Each structure stands twice: as structure tokens, then as C-alpha cells.
Image (tube, rainbow, N blue to C red):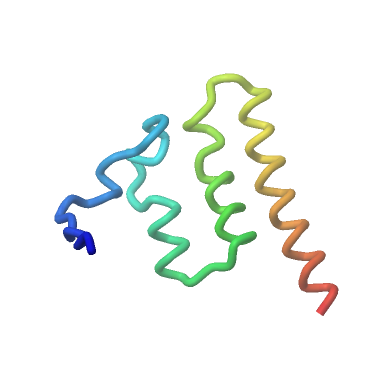
Length: 82
């Protein structure tokens, strides 16, 4: 059986596919995990945090805002079904 070696490198020090989280004082993943947020809330935070940093085009920025709204709508719908 192969043993997994513990990595001492901080995974938040790297980012795959861009730089839009690396310069933040706290990355969305850290905030989401430390606050035990659910899937929909976490994704809404991710998209609303990155909209102005990841994309240069207004269309893509608005798309990220729409994605954040969509996750909140999903959460609201789920809560209303309880």
C-alpha cells in the first residue's frame, strides 16, 4: 500500500488557472471552510469575490455576478422546500 506523504507547502500559495485569488487577504476557500458554509453559499462567495479580478470583459464579469445570484436562488429554493 502506498503511503501518502504530508505536504508542508501551503496550497493557498499556488493557484491553478489564474491569479485572481492569490492577492486577496483571505481566499474564498479559506473563508468558506472556516465558516462551515454550505455548497450554494460557498459558490456564491467564490463568484462574488472574483468577478472584478478574474475577467477583463464586462460580459464575463456580469456572468460571474449572475452565477453568484443563481447559487443564492438555488439556496433560497432549497430552503423554501423544507
